Amino acid sequence: MAALLGGKGSGEYKENLKGKVWVFPDNVDTDVISPSRYLENLQEMLDHTCESVIKEFPSKVQDGDIIVAGRNFGCGSSRETAPAILQEKGIAAIVAESFARIFYRSSVARALPVLEVNEVSKEFQTGDEIQINIPNAEITNLRTGKTLKGKKIHPILLNLLKNGGLEKQLLAELKENK
Amino acid sequence: MSGQTIAEKILANHFLSGSDIKPDDIIIAKLDLVMSHIGTGKVVIDFRKIRPSKIRKVFDPNKIVVIFDHYNPAPSERWASVHDLIRNFVKKQGIKNFYDIKEGICHQVLPEKGHVRPGMLIVGGDSHTTTYGAFNAASCGLGNTDLFYSYVKGELWFRVPHTIRFRITGKLPPSVMSKDIIIKIAGDHTAEVATYKSIEFTGDTMENLSIASRMTMSNFALELGAKFAFGVPDQKVVDWVKERTTEPFELVKPDPDAIYEKTYEIDVSDLEPQISCPHTVDNVKPISEVAGTKINQAFLGSCTNGRLEDLEIAAKILEGKRIHNDVRMIVTPASQEIWIKAAKSGVSETLINAGAVITNPSCGACFGALGGMLAPSEKCISSSNRNFQGRMGSAAAEVYLGSPATVAASALKGEITDPRDL
Image (cartoon, rainbow over all chains, first blue to last red):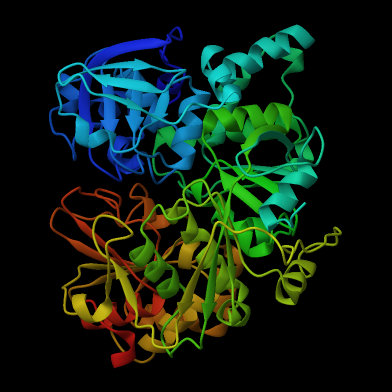
């Protein structure tokens, strides 16, 4: 768990992202993303993430892919292994109709971009290509050409994403003040 | 300026750059208490990244509580090593408020030991930290990175939440419990009715509930998405807290002209027991529609319903009887204090004689990694707060959530049973 949580993260912040879409339903919970029975073993966690919702997800997901989900994504436990596993699997951003509070907070803290866009899951099929502009909260389905506008990320939180997340910000701050 | 809700008042009191706040503002606030359990292990590892090593200090060792509850006693070498890592850290940092494997679940032990008082702003590395709302504290869960930041800085960003209100009225029928009310709310208003929001539970039903029953509501409120979940700020809270601490405190009450985003009215006079069916908490049916579903396991415990009154109602139902032959009943008291009281009053003996297994205080079977796991195709009736797919073992198993009375009645009959029928 420890190795994973300190893992590769989301890399450099990019304003514009493009990637292949995985569509998830409403109420995807943290036990689906990071089942309790695999919390002991990093490789098992990676091999089984989200399989109860999309069986081929753990074996087929690729670096730069983007999740498009329904409502209440990431509900349940506060375990940060949930966003961490998705980052480790290469997920570059998550666009959902709504997020559970702790999952949203932890994603921002880990510099994983999360965008709220109404009705977004109805506009996509798994395999579509999506283009995202993060500061404008604008997304486009490149197959259908349809563009949707979401809720803009609060400037303070956007800054946190740009700075590489809360831990990076904290360590930099401590270095300055030592 | 209009009046303020409880959440707005507490956040304004802790805001580091003034006191003028409104919903959707993002503020930096001072923390009164930081709680963490097994997740402390990650904090310890993060601390090693702080250079130079001499500045690796927590913000205030007296404002941190560390407790073991998920893996008690350590079920594997790995968790034993994490415990070891945390014990050393706690010693080195001078964190005196450390509770090792014997005490019980964080959300029960912290109030019992007097760490939770009205008006406090508390964060915890556990989602059900909302439980302390029953004591008029603003408290919420967060992940490991936010936890690390809190440990070092003693402050954190918060989005000021909108507040919704549930006004609950009417006398609860016999054998119907506060758990049934909160499950009913989940069913009627979905598992995201309170996402990002602060809840205030009000009304005469709430006033008449015990502190334990109110804790059940504030705890389960997290499953509705809540950030904070306040019970009624009344004399019951004052009396309960005064028994546990000599620290001063004052109740925080909402202003009469506070602005609520929405108020929901709920009359419980005719409420029947409610069940959250697999695999979401808001897949709710009245018990009459699921009664007769065969079960393999009955779990009575967790931070939702592992308190003395929960064990007592189960003992009352099972007194002098034997649970069904095909059912395993697991009882896990939420704390050592509860366990001792249940042992002294004869409640434990009654449950054991009825065929239940009583375990040491811990999170127990609730989170599917410490025992009481389910095989594929098995069904469990549980007094806990999550019935997610795979939560208690196999992803092909099913978990049904209900009140402690429903759990006991179902254990007795071997199938989901209305406790009012006994």
